[in-house]
Length: 138
Image 1 (tube, one colour):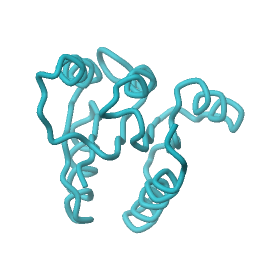
Image 2 (cartoon, helix red, strand yellow):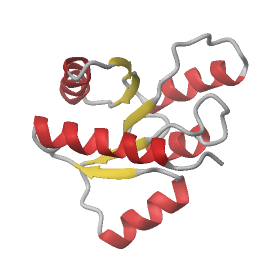
Image 3 (tube, helix red, strand yellow):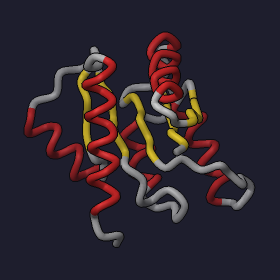
């Protein structure tokens, strides 16, 4: 399974990418939101032939475009619209704010940083992927 990982902090991006690989997935990494946005332009124009991600893990606050803006756009792109999307944030969000963001930006989950330990994160992300796969496609 290919995972899109978008994170501007190199240490976190490299750590999550390494964990993704250890878990048997192939990371597709981006260091800014703008780079993901530009890549989505190519996907929409039919210039990108893949591989395409089957899961996205993105920081909310990145240079260029924010993770929530990217998530909203992903939901409009045929190749990406049904993938599970998880956002990460270093800013404490209350339960109501998380619910609002999930509904407004069509994300499946939001994780607060610091990220959970290796095993908890693996279980959490794979559970989200499994739950999404069991939902009927619109």
